[in-house]
Every structure is written in C-alpha cells, then in structure tokens.
Length: 414
Image 1 (cartoon, helix red, strand yellow):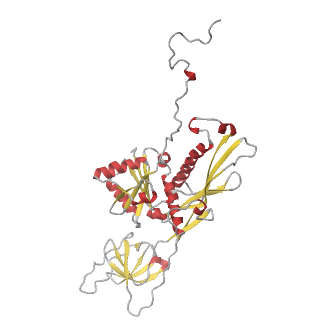
Image 2 (cartoon, helix red, strand yellow):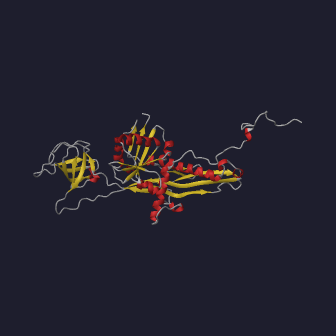
Image 3 (cartoon, one colour):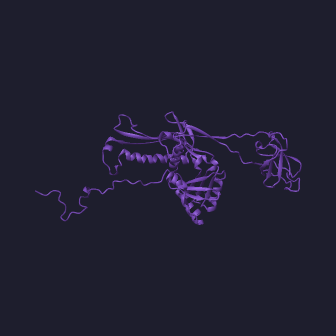
C-alpha cells in the first residue's frame, strides 16, 4: 500500500506545511493614535473641579453631579463699560467760544465731561448734550485760562478720536444726567452626542487575538471616537436648531470658531516672534490672568522654530500641569502668560498647510452639561441575537466675553 501525504524527501523545515504553523501573535492590540481630544478632556476636568469646589469638596466630582444646566437652550450675558472714546462725525473749524460738535455715540456724554482730541491734543469741556441731533456744545481750548498753556484750538476732522479724560462740576451744581448700562445677551444649545457598538452572540463566544471581538474592546475604542466627535463640534461646530427626520428637535452647539469673532489673526507664509507678540497684545487687550493656546501640530512646530528658537527662548512647565495631571508648557510675554498644548484633533479638522491656534481664557469657558455621559447597555431590540450598547451625552459650549479669546492661523502654502 502506498504511503499517503508524504512530502518530498529531505528534512522538514518551517515552510513545510506552513498553513499549520501556530502564529506568533502578540495578544495586545496597539492604538495608533494618541493625545486626541485634549480640549474636551481639559474642559471636563475643569468642570469636575468647579463642581467639587461649589460643594466645598477637594478633588473632582463625577457622574450625574456634573449636570449644570436644566434647559437645552442656555443663556448668559456680558457687560462692557465701553471704551471712553468717541469719533467726530462732522468736522468743525478752529473757532473759539461755544461750539457745536456732532459725535458718533451721544449716549455716553453728559454735561461736565472733558475730552481730548487725540489728533490735535486740544482739550474741550462739554457744557450741553443734545441727544436728538447727537450734538455736544463744547468750550474750546479748555485749560488755557491761567499760566499753564494748553494746546491751541485746531480744526477737528471727521473721524478724529475723542477720549474722555474726566469730568468737572462747579460748586453747588445739580447732579449730572443719569447713565445706565445694558448687558449683551448670548445663547447656545446643548447637542446630543451618541455612538453605538454591538456584537452578535456568536462573535462574543469566539476567541480572537487581542480580544478585538469583545464588546468591552469595541466600547473602549468607540468611547475615544465619541470624544473626538465632541471635540470636533467644540472647535468647528455651528449653532442651529431644526426639526430632525423623526419630527423632534435637533440642536447643534456653536464651537470656538463661530463664537470667537474679534481677535482673529490670519497670517501668510510664516510667523515671527513679533507676529506672535502682536497677537498676544490683541487677546490681552481686555485683560485676563492667563491664556491657554490649544493648537494643531503645524502651529506647535511654528511656535517652536520661529517664536522660541529664533529668540533662544524655552517653554517652562505650567503650574496647571500639576493641577490637571496633563502636559502643559508655558510661555511668558510682556502682555501675559500662554499655556501651550497640542490637540491632534485639529490636525484632522484643518488642512495640513494651515497652522491653527486657539488662545483661550479657560476661566471664561464652561462646558454646559444637560445629560452627563453614560453607557446605556442592551439598547437592541429584544429579538436580536446579540447586544448593542450606546454612549450618549448632551452638552454644549459656553464662551464668556469672546473679546478675551482669539484665533491665529498661518497659511503655510503661501
């Protein structure tokens, strides 16, 4: 009888019948991407600490206690005392005595105010205010009545800037006309974020390298995607409310790009140290203690090469790194401090040739949580042979005093 399944004569080697060889497979599955969703992670950490502080607790709180709004539409207001300046609407000649002057914002003036024309340096006293015609009655060349000379009367041109330098009243004078301030109102919506993952009964019972088939493994990866989707919305989302396909309200939250409108710096080709200082001057124009610069990798490279190395500067470790347990570096400028952190979610949200950075005053940013994140288990239909779990949460972004934040971009393709 012939011998069956005999291989060619000679010693057997590892290629002989290699379909039967046991695979040397590392049981661990390695995540390719890391350090994503930094901004939303930092926001949530800040919210945990703020909530704990309100309850006079140290550390952080979790779960249902993170809810800080009770309406999907949340509102807030900012008030600005304003810059005590105005502009000349209609030019006037260099005349002495009582003169009429039409200005742009009559509501901020009252009799007794003194202003300086920043172009001519002439000081004038306001003696009367006529609201209906936006007209000030003024005494020219104020302060030239004794041995201390004042700048001479000069032509005032439309567009000249007038800066308030105080007010003065005679003895036994009546009280000046009252003034009041009205805040600006803002609102945003919470957005429902949701992702699901599932596994059939057969899949769960099977054995795979790295347990990649198990629902627990899939839930861990889906959670990372869940956070990335929220991160994208907080950067580039827009506020909207409409009716969804099921006839129910559908809301989206405004992100940083839509909420920040004042301090925008768009550069072409590159960024010098002085370009960055000019940007710092903008975002600190209304004050503040410190800003956090959340940037993509391209902006981080520019900061390292063009801003730091060109001037022989180095970043220091930020005090906030210890507070939140994450890597944050600090650059100190004459205008104020900047904490730097790279959020690689931004690498996916903008072209590779665009360097992007968000300068944020974190004390003026809140994550408003209507429904804290949870995993809802077994959301599948009862007849399904398997299991589906759902990650869901409802929250939105709140940005207070947008003038104290900023966005800087550099188009590297130009």
